[in-house]
Image (cartoon, rainbow, N blue to C red):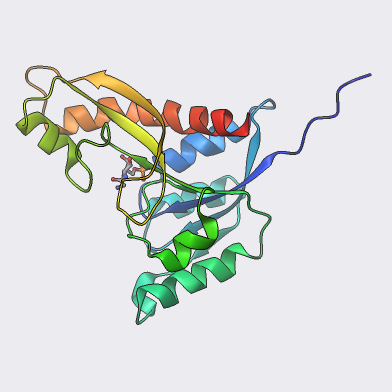
Length: 194
Ligand code: GAR
């Protein structure tokens, strides 16, 4: 008898821009053995290209502009409300560029993860590639980690590393790291599903 496939993990993906990591998750979710499926994409920037990617994949995409709210908490509440319409087990921040407060994080603690383009705990925050090159690092990479109140400080789930080459510009390095990001996010979800 064929095995009954176990229930897939329901994902919400939070984005703010280009959405290439969203695309890597969309592509992974098309593989029959991938243990998760995207239930909804939430985007805080109405002009983000990632919205187009979600639409092309036939996924519901909720656009909630943070600019329409007078406080972070009110914006976050709108996201919480939107998410409550879907059967979500895990929220994946994929280039989501808003810092979240405990109002959002606490109810999702342990089920909210982020991808960051550095080898945390090095280079938290922005301009990670430029800073890694300036610091004379020989290695860079990306980190998937749990989201906690301390920005880019939550427990690490996995990292992938790349070399920094002698004449790298920040853009060269960003492209090399991004390739690994697209492998890392699906890999992290497989790991969490186990
Ligand atoms: C990615 O490099 C991601 O790691 C980074 O933004 C980019 C989004 O690209 N995230 C952060 O810097 C979070 N602090 P994408 O929209 O093509 O996925």
